[in-house]
Image 1: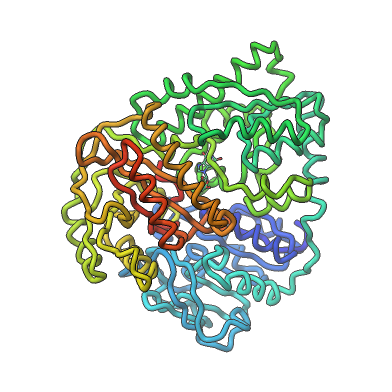
Image 2 (image 1 turned 60 degrees about the vertical axis):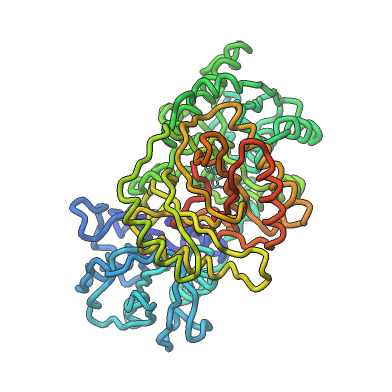
Length: 605
Ligand code: XMP
């Protein structure tokens, strides 16, 4: 490997993000599996051990080459990586008394180069259960949080450090400075730039595609648009065909807007196909989020095959181009030790088969959203496209929850008592909802219950989102079975909500489409589009009268979508959105998601 930082990947959701951060600091970085031979790392300046979904006491942990701790290279272990290196060097790891997810305050012991310039304390992002209880010889405590006395440890002599928190995520605000300090400790050369990335990647694309052509599904989002432009530039428009499929899960007016935009940009090699009936048929009667995703992914490929055969395109002469980003792969459990969080539509089994046959080319697969945007700008795409809010491939289908109408009441009563007690300290009432949504905690997927609180007075100027944030974090950290908290906005009083039998139907999608259009219009008019990274609107099959359902607003801020904070929108704006949405036929109540990621994901599924 060229001189830089080797990231040892234990399967953590953020392992690759570490490499992204290191590249941002202008140091080359590459990812290696934990059983790599240290000889392969000759010439590197240092190593970072990533987090991972395992516990060091798991019967079947990722195979680790202990020789990696026998070199005299500096090492920084993060989360699982920190626990693993402490254990291998003679320390002890135990199950922590409190699971910690989300923000915590790190009190810094002082005097360590790793925290140079960071003062006495910092906000850090935690996501773990186990903790280091006994330090290896030569190690000292460099920082502690209230719940984790060994949050930062190290042996300055050997230049080996361990952090229980995640400096690589954006929600450790000074995390980049910590990584920067580690690079200084490693004396790593700062020479890497992203400037020539487009050239390098286009060369790779030409090589992979060979003398074949490329068929690309173009949703119109930034990823597929940047990929489309790259393929056109790399191969020439006559060897590239784009297909925009209207799957019926698009936003109001989206397909027409995409068609106009790409034509305006001069792309004539784009076809549009309305296949909404096929997609609705594919998801008929489904409730489970993964089953929905699987069905949608399959329909995409069926429609693609149908169009290709209609155009008499020889399947051996056409490869599939995709705008897959790195997070799509990692969340689909697609790196060796990663847990499945969700199957992205571009990562279903059939695509994996095509990949194995060398029939898929993904020029953006190493990148994160921020890097794709940088690349898009470098390619000359206009800001309004490059800075669009992302929209998932399965679209509104992952924002329209389904239910067979049964109350899955297990554990709800005891969870509700515990959560309600926490809410009551903030003067709020709480109900645990009899539906489930997807979340992510400690590198694992969760599928459990949201809770809704009511009594928060949005119209009082001194009411503060912070009260809700603290409460939400306490509930999801300490109440088993609750992975999300929502604040009721309208009406004022929490109605008793019960589940409703509801699937993905045209009628429900229309309600959601209208609600989404209202929320986006109000956000746009307030000029707040750029301040918010994404704002899903979610339809939840909970009802008071057997008909009308609950709509949830889910605005978030995040630079990379791997972690996120719920956005704190101005109260009057939220009130306007909620009042207008509540007026729609089919809507019983409007709530506001006050959960960070983790423990909630952006989408509810
Ligand atoms: P989650 O829900 O995993 O979302 O926190 C993170 C980001 O990924 C988007 N997302 C998808 N994008 N295909 C996509 O192209 C998908 O299947 C998919 N699922 C989630 C989501 O909208 C958010 O921006």
